[in-house]
Image 1 (cartoon, each protein chain N blue to C red):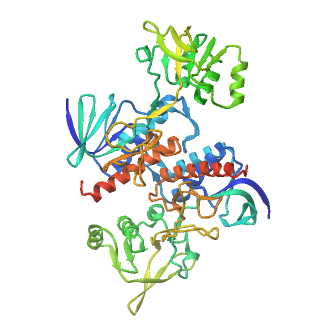
Image 2 (image 1 turned 135 degrees about the vertical axis):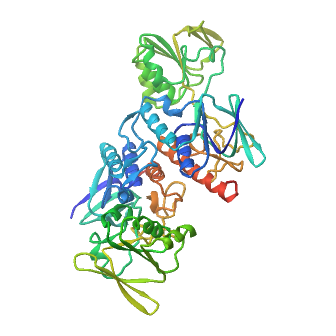
Image 3 (image 1 turned 45 degrees about the horizontal axis):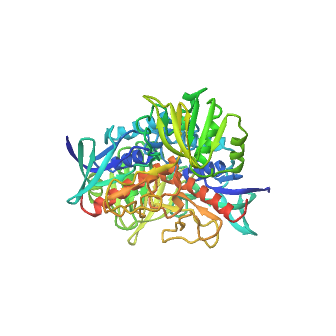
Length: 305
Length: 305
């Protein structure tokens, strides 16, 4: 258990967090970056082609370049534990992560989004052993195998259209009717190796050390389907529950004002965790940079530096 | 005189314009980019260190990388003439540049800012022949020469502090009192090769094919100062006068709404030409990307595609 003091904590290290840390350091703020990993949602895809300046770049390389640049400006980067809590203390905040705490004058929440989990027995135990939340990343590992995709929206449909070219058979398990482009749903219907089961409720993922099957309810029926992989494509949710009193929108995204300030004075937010409409790396990075400049101004205006 | 039709014209090719064109093409819009040059204000500095992903990169290289990526997505890039006019025609617009016109359904103005000119006799004729608007770019060319800096703000002060290390003598000509950090103004006062003349009105720049002197009024006096270079550092102004009816703020920046739309429906704007608070390459690029996504949505919503 250790405690350290900084001007500002940046929570999360995706593009928004890294840009926030870079600009906080450009403004000479003592900065700690706290994140479970570095890269955020960029970790979920193999390559990036729409970040201006890089025609096509492996995600790992862009992450490394952003990280190297951020670190060259000298923030403290604490990797390995996600922040679990932010509490007000006096005129500042205490951020908890793992066994450590950080005392700061302002906070930038750049925690992004994480995949929604199904919350069924077996899911947690079998993550990385057949259960995955990233079809683009892990699809290629299931060549010639039977797999299930769980979800009912466009990301589930795209995942199935991707996997039918890799797997021997794809079961698309949708809890309601599929929702998406009719012609894409039509393409799935025409594929010989895809079975779409609508109104299917996944009740458990089964296997001893690796995925062996998935159990579903539909109607009054229960069925066990043999699969080697379960691709959970039920959407992404913002990590917006770190501090009490944050105003959220209906999608649980953090509401910010023009100054990137949340409803809690001194707590700023940037990137995909916020209500910003466009979820793009370039835009998240820009939002991160802005939030740091605004936080710097707030710290000055409120005589905290 | 030629005329061509596109879905959208992006006017300007700085970071905002290039990102707008990239994203317009990602959205499969037929896109024409019209700009006098490619790079915008990035052309005015030697290197860039705060664009996330590039720890330190020569400006020319970052411009080239952005350009290559944009062009790989297939917009038509018309370089050499700035757009001079945008007019409504029917449900769309006509953009004029040089002898050519472009018929488009929507416009993104990403014209950025240009240096303010003095507007005195001799200035226009001697641009590039001793008159310059970029101290960082052209300072090194005046080693051992006498030069004048014209301006009264921080950029003029920084320019003089830069040039006193290069030139034999620097005349800093300020129309009012110098405004800036007292310790920096103090440094100028201590320098043996700097003469600060306040309340000096530049009335002409003189020379036959190259700058030979500058004429100033101060009080009732007129004086001719022999110089080889005139560094105009009187600030930057937005290029916001392409179309009638655009709402501007007091700094002549284009007012945009959350959708990046200007007061003229179908005309969007992004980057430093707009009222966006932070003038940064990363932010301008993000704004450009957003404006294209918003324009795409507007074209769909209004059944123009």
